[in-house]
Image (cartoon, rainbow over all chains, first blue to last red; front, side, top):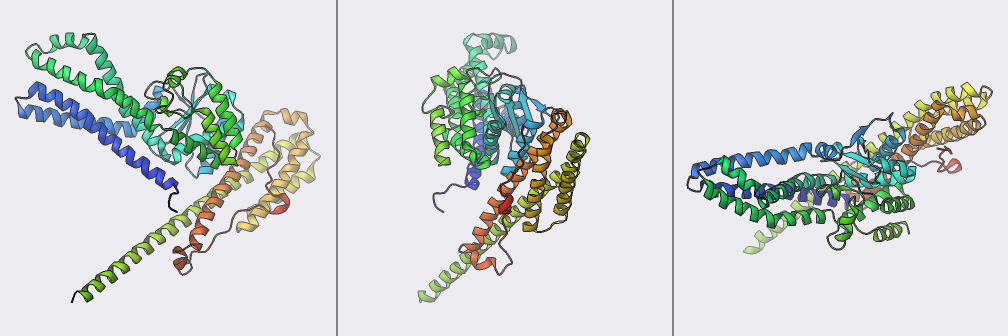
Length: 313
Length: 188
């Protein structure tokens, strides 16, 4: 059996990476905040310790919120709304069919009102999973093609890719967004202005702390964006394509669905840097084309189709 | 004399690791058997759903096509037979008969444009088509788990303990040759 990668292995690997991600998030945020505290209150050990304890507590709460509330947050960020069976029996049935084929609980289905063609799955585990499609995709695909796309998402659920991707979006996305805003503010001098009015007595050491944090964030933030892109590796997408074919036994439908999805040039408005990696095809086309190559979040269409065809042979 | 001590250590280690391997193998067999049972119950749920759809479908078609009594009776009989059937093989056969009956019912329905146009019939057709798919996918999932379970029972080292501990191979859910791979031609 050596060399054979089972679903069990994939799930275990995702669990490890998820745990690692949470630890990295806690270490990074606390190191940054502790640096600030030390610079500000370096002379007073008790105050510094108190601040560190508070930040550890707060960042842990954020991590817990990301884990338990991440899926809901991502749905809100994407303005997705729940589809009841009566709203669209066919879509609902297709999702249930794929859940049965994978032997997983039947996940709720959400619709993003956007004419771009795309889909993703999220959730901390198969019981918390949700499948999301755009209304453009719903309208453009045949039943078989829709089934293939849902099957691709269901394989992300089955291997628990959804947990890692969700944590990446929430935790790393949060750090990236905050540091972007911070660096932006620092550059334009807004924070420096605010500092003057808030803490008049401590100006010097606060300025030093701000500078240090700016430096840390300026170095770390691009690395984090790369991290998001790398975790959403080509391998993960190839595996989900293969898993989809295993569920539907219909490689041609997946190929024609991917063709339609990639042929669509429309940009999905609700996608951003933190959520782009979740989708079955890149939602932000221009950006994806520029970062083509080693760090692209999705393999190129031709490669994907070739691999799917190899499965069929 | 280091000889006796060393032999003892090796012996204990060998027995210990054999026990560990046996325990892991046993747990794997139990997990696989549980999965085949879950797979079977998920087929069962879908078959029941199909049985539940039939009276509704028959009533809807009857409203437009009164004179097709024979077809209605055939489907209804097949449904009753399927609900009474037990065991993997008998059930598969009975379900194949239902499938043949539904085929005929839908063929009859083709001759009635008013029926085809009715909203209730459209909804039932989607439900029926999807239920057929769900049965097919549940069967596929069940057969995959059975394959894994049966392979585990027949391969070394689990083979050594499977028989003694009552792990019997399970039957695949296969629809018999005549009406094989049959899904009523439902047009969407």
